[in-house]
Each structure stands twice: as C-alpha cells, then as structure tokens.
Image (cartoon, rainbow, N blue to C red; front, side, top):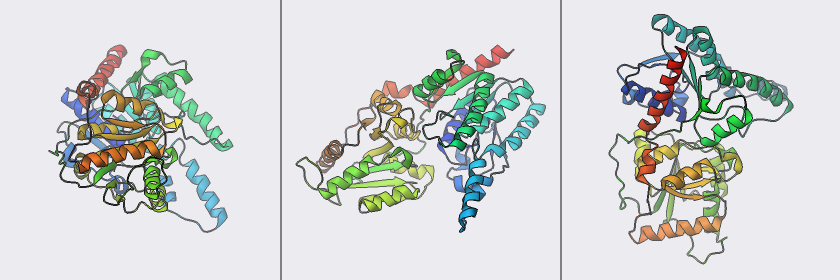
Length: 426
C-alpha cells in the first residue's frame, strides 16, 4: 500500500487508507504501508489507536519545496512573481511528486526481501499513482489504483495557457496509469461514470465503484438531549470556499436582520449555536465576521479525533456542505460517513448529486439543494421549537441501507478485487 496520507498524519485520505489496511489485516492479508514521516501540520491522530501488530508501516522522508515556498513572503513584485511560478512548477502534478524516489526505493527494498502479490495506490496526491505505475513495471506485480477524487477531471483545475499545457502532460500521465492498472477504484458513482465517458478506452469492468465506509466509534458517546439548551449544529473538518458552502450562514444572517418573508419570531442569541471544528481557513472566518454571526458561531481549532467525536455525538444537527453548485455534484465528503457513525441527523447543502443521494438513500438527514434562505430558516425554526418543547430533532435512518456502507462491507469488495487481479496475473 502506497499512501501519502496515513496516521498519524491527519486527513480524510488517511482514514480511508488506514481502515483499508487494518481490515485487510483482519481478513488475513499481510500489508506493508509506505507513507511519509509524521508532519506537524498534519497531526491529529493517536498512534496507539491504530496499532495493528502485523502491519508494517514504512514512513519515509520526502522533499517538498512547495511547502517551503508557501511559508516565504516577498515584498518586491518581481520576487513575488518568481515565487508564484516556482510554486506552480513544484505543484506539478502536485507538490508531493518528489516523494516518488523515496517511496519507490523503499518499495523495491521490501520487494527484494519478500515479494508481494499486489500494489495498492491511492490519491490525491495523484503522483502516488506514478510510484505504483513504475513499481508495477519494474516488478510485474499488478496495480490497483484508488481515486478518492478525480485527477484531470477535477472541477477546479486552472484554465490559463500555462495550466492547459501542464494539463496535457498530466492527461498523458493519467492515461498511463489507467492503461497499466489492473483495477481502478472510484469513490463515487459519478466519478466512475465521468472517467469511463472521458477515457473511452477503459473497459467498464475495470473501473469499480468503492465508496468510503463508516465504523462504530470506540468511544461510548450517547446523545444527551438535555445537555444543550440551544439548537447545536456541529461541522467537523475543513470548509472548501471554492464550492461556496455557506448557505446556512447567509440564511442565519438574513434571519437575524429580518430579511425573510415568513412570519416567524426573530432569531435570538440563545436559540442556536454553530460549532466549527478545525475550520481554519481565513475565508470562512472573514465571512462570519462580515455577516455579524460571531455570537452564533464558535470556531474551534483542530481537536483530537476522540474529542471531535464527542462533539458530533452531542450535536442536534451535523453540518455538511459542498455548496449547491453543479461543480460539487460528484463529490462526497468523507465526514458524511463519520456522521453515520455518530448517529445524529445531518443538515446538508449539496447539488442534486452524489452527496444528496447518499443522505436521502440512508435517511440520515435533510438536504437543501438551493441557497434559498426562507426554506432554511423555516426548517431551523421548526427544529428550535422542537428543542424548546423537549422533542428530539427528527432522525429516521434506514439501518439496512446504512449497513451497506459499513467499512467491513467495503473492504470485502476491495479484497475480492485484489484476489481477482492476483489470480489473473498468474
């Protein structure tokens, strides 16, 4: 397994990779994980929590000039221009590319000691697949390439002349990965469909839909409806400002200012609180201030996973948003699967696509597909009144549908695909 993100480095990709590795070990596989050494800016996991006795984790060094340049500032215009160009060059196809020689060297060292049967790579960063591609070519071992997000089909790729040139080169890289992989995994149905439509040379049975999965929390956190007097909404993780995921905040601002058409009571400070865990981007902070929502919104820094789960399990509603624009329709934030484990209702803001379908299919919450304040305000008003009257926020999950997304079910499909490519390579 070649996975740039892996505990104790924290990211959504780290969770997927760690669970895949751990559950494969439980199914009798021996897994060697190649990842990077722990980084202080990606900390957030407890090492001991993920310790599996038979799993070998090989953490290597890497070079990342982009991270170094990001911390540098330049006063002169020409120096800022040079810095910008260098950062763009060192982020091709992503800023983790220079990990390739370190990871490849370690993988070949493992191969010489004990020949493995399959290679698993996961992205982003997409340069990870180049490591797997070269390793597969050198060893003849079949490659399974897992795409947690699209590569060149990403909705927010640049479109300048320089970006178009780099895009052409990346498409050649991407095609080489597709051609030489025995199986390609796509984490959403839409990503699989778009991949097959754009790269028509790929056989349909080669691309497998394999979503993220959820697993039970080890902590015994049970919702206490008496704990919070206010309607409490929790958002765990990062916001992506490019997707314009702020419909909830705009609705609250309109309610606070009286700019809505429904005849309901004004919004008071004690009615609602929104807790943002780890929302560290300046765009989100600035918007909350501009909308005058500081008395309703609490921004907290990154907390340990166990602590984050406590917040989730004690929330009345869990917030998930990638905005209601069409560009987000193929994405499913991994937090939705954490929210399934938390067993608390979701308030989602998504285009009518993958995420909206997942929420509706499993019955884990309500989805707003348009940024219309009135509908959002009316819903929140109903939830606040229910809370005041001692009634629980409605939560009617379809347990059978949710079980399909348990990580154990997902990894069984992964195992089947690994066994298939191994048998076909003999």
